[in-house]
Length: 423
Image (cartoon, rainbow, N blue to C red; front, top):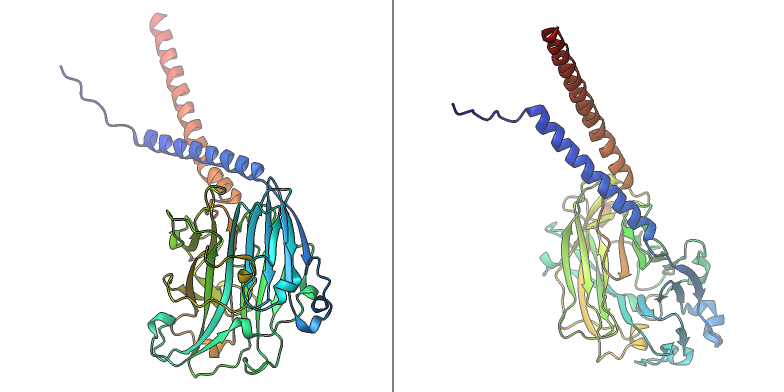
């Protein structure tokens, strides 16, 4: 007689699935904890206008800002934040025995001079720059919220290299390794009492920003916060867009600068945001096997107290690699031989359709991270993993305990029946 196999018990299936999931989460927790514990850290120092002895450094009204952050680990990452010409961030990775040398006379002179900023000995492993070149104000009469969808709109262009900037030295925070670049008031290119500011913050360990959108950072990262505050709109339906120029310090014949959108695994830190925009700059062989990146979430905020209620979209256009605008002055042109670099630019539009335009809030702020290596990926936080393990572990324990109790009870019952039969 053929015996028909019994279908698996549903309780057994549930118990096994929960057990497997609990094991997976435990392993993930162990790996994540080990990874966090083994993350390299860097010792940071910050300096204003390093080794400058010429008169321009002593005259704060000239506002020739150059902030230098040195991040020391197995190698050294040098960050330069500057308002000399167009606001620029330069990142350079070198061996530990390398020092920054600035020729201030050449740096203050007009035109290109790729020997104004050097690292001695000249052994740069990798370098890149991010330049904030122009800001556009456009009359978004069709409420598209994206500058590329408004090609015939009335538009004003503002060269950020033409702005006057406040003394950056007074904003340096040696504890947080940050500094703020603020425009001065009452300049001809900006109406009213509005300001444009760029805050730079360097990090020496792995963590997550305390402010929305809570971007992850590593020991190889600088965070940049760009803010437009209280500018007087030129149009009834004004929106602003920022042009960003990315510069790879050496051409890579096999790889290009690319921009892509990736998916986030959860929205624990920025609810409702499952997307991350990334700009990837390729490695620079033979010295560097790693490239660099800029990473941001497609969101901006129209209030100083960032929260979900004042979140708007930050839409980025496709990369442009031809007919790029190159600032006349910037520390970029004082560091690089412009014939040897790769460049790409994109526009970032601030605002969401039906949000009342910039006129409704007179404020917008956006955040990105710039770093060496590969961008960090979203992971389940330690708290979430513990909650999941607790939430799934308790039912598993109950199922296991209940199953064990039933088995023991059945065995005892069979033992009693056998005992009675023998007797």
